[in-house]
Image (cartoon, rainbow, N blue to C red; front, side):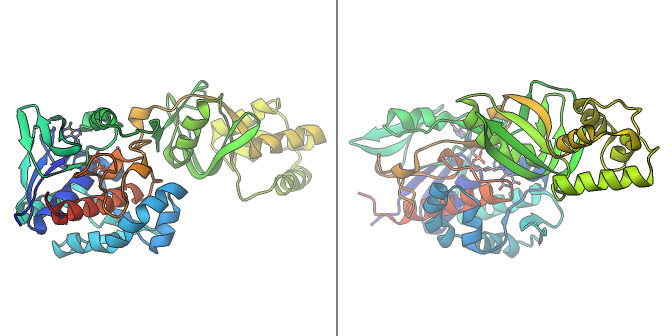
Length: 413
Ligand SMILES: Cc1cc2nc3c(=O)[nH]c(=O)nc-3n(C[C@H](O)[C@H](O)[C@H](O)COP(=O)(O)OP(=O)(O)OC[C@H]3O[C@@H](n4cnc5c(N)ncnc54)[C@H](O)[C@@H]3O)c2cc1C
């Protein structure tokens, strides 16, 4: 039996690992990338520091994903867990450190080291890399894929692995090309929405403000649809930072049905009662102290101002003159300051895209399409979107490994 020829579309995290694995098993592999370099998104990951993967038990890591995604990812995560990926980079001298929250980064905090290692790894495995080579579609014969159509002409292959990514950060090369081809072949692509994205608000009053460790809550049709605790940054368009990214997927989904409004709890560890008691005690000990001064000692000035504004309390009001109703109002807005409604969650600005090839149409043990034979799908092209924390790269490494492994070992008809 001859070794199979494998064409891999897209030299991102999933495609690189798929190509490396298939070539290591003896397949003749061509890795096709439309941009002039490999690993562009790895380079910009984690703000250029590259949060490679996540520490902890595999089941804990899987729990970070939605239930159906975790179920799909389980076989590939067990086949190629974080430790297996780390073994590759460790063997090439990369040192990593684990943050208290489990996120794993290179010690020297540069994604360049990771891409350099992956470049060496695929070269040594004998992968042929063709850069600046855009794939335009798949070649199909009798229900199976027989190669790809590139901008320079057809390229025959026994197996094709599509690892063309999502459609956020289009400047990095990911413009959702593969979904169009896959749809024509009968694959279902679930609705595409932003995830891990900033959220644009109608109200831009807070621009420039940064809040540490707050609770952001999104509400729609009278129900809480998302919540996240962490830092919150206000940009000229709306909100960003961990809280905004953390709720963005749910917000984008809910906005299709109706408006989503936000409130921020600036004191998540305090209760309404504890904050009220504190105000009462403070009013007793320092009746001439301004309410504003009291708040500014606990929060940024503009945030404190906004709380007073919402509670309709003048900036010259003293603690001692604060009535019961006014006091309750101050506390109410400390625990839930309205930020107004979301205007948009821009898909192109998300770190990942939620939505993609329907998971039930891909075998999670092999990554082979259940619609077209000899076609393998891996990485963000699939309907998978994990939270911030190295989860998305791990999903790409693991699904890429399994796709490359099966493409190289499944017999050629
Ligand atoms: C700003 C940012 C920061 C992030 N930080 C992290 C992080 O720290 N940790 C983490 O786990 N995840 C992070 N992510 C998410 C993570 O980078 C992606 O989920 C992951 O890279 C997806 O890998 P992939 O191989 O599926 O797709 P990609 O890495 O996007 O690779 C797809 C490749 O296919 C190529 N391609 C597309 N169409 C064609 C075509 N027609 N022909 C040829 N080539 C084509 C593209 O040019 C691209 O190189 C971040 C994402 C962004 C945008």
